[in-house]
Amino acid sequence: MASLKELRARIGSIKSTKKITSAMKMVAAAKLRRAQARAESARPYASAMRRMMAELAGATVGEEGGPLLLTGTGKDKIHLLVPLTSDRGLCGGFNASVHRLTERLIRRLQSEGKTVKLLPVGRRAISYFSREYSDLIVDKIMGIPGDVPFSVAEGLGVKINALLEAGEIDVCELVFNKFINAMSQVPQKQQLVPLVVEDAAETSAVADENKALYDFEPDEETLLFRLLPKNLQVQLYAALLETAAGENGARMTAMDNATRNAGRSIDSLSQVYNRTRQANITNELIEIISGAQAV
Image 1 (cartoon, rainbow, N blue to C red):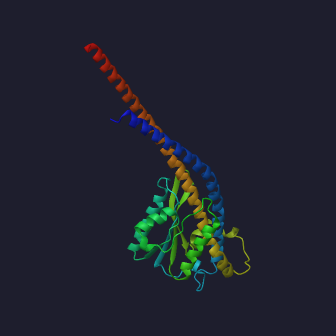
Image 2: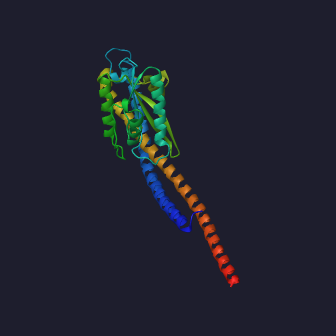
Image 3: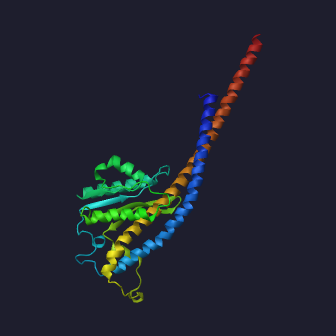
């Protein structure tokens, strides 16, 4: 059995940890409100961009010489996976869920004879995949600021577009956690290249008789060449905002659980401490009484 000194030290240590986890929970909660508002504000804009691309793409789908971001290279051999994670830990299984989904995709694609490349975003993704799949990594992005500036998505979009134009990839898929609420973040994948026009069209489906007619100036093809890179950046930015909101939600939940567990541990150790202290006092009294009787 531990001594009273050891129990006091352990209780003091857990109390200090409880203060830290409680403070981290409050900080994550404050950040979550801002991150959630930004992620929810970006969703309609990203959805509108997909609908716009669906309207414009009808004129060029299937034609030769179309934008690579829309039509792809015409092959399905080389796949680029872009896992998005946080830069920091202490957020439960938030990052591990992206790792698992990405690994499943890697194994499935490799079993089909496809070549897989990785472009991890976030320190946790870089650290994990550098250990497990270092030979697949073609580039990496780390050190994402907490406010997630659009320049991060812009730079990532430029990297993906450069790989596509150089013929180094045929398909690009994004793996990230979609923010639902503070308790739930759902890992999912989204194909970025080539653009999945059918999915975008379904989200904006309306009755044919109610569809508006558009006049495009300049023509649809010119607009696509200009807007497709911007659409790629917008989809990446929306995913980065979802990741930021999910990270803070997961961290708030994890720190709340840690604080509760610390409180239960303190209560349990306090009971042990009190029982041990009472037993020591009883033993001392017995020794004193026994000594007095012996005299």
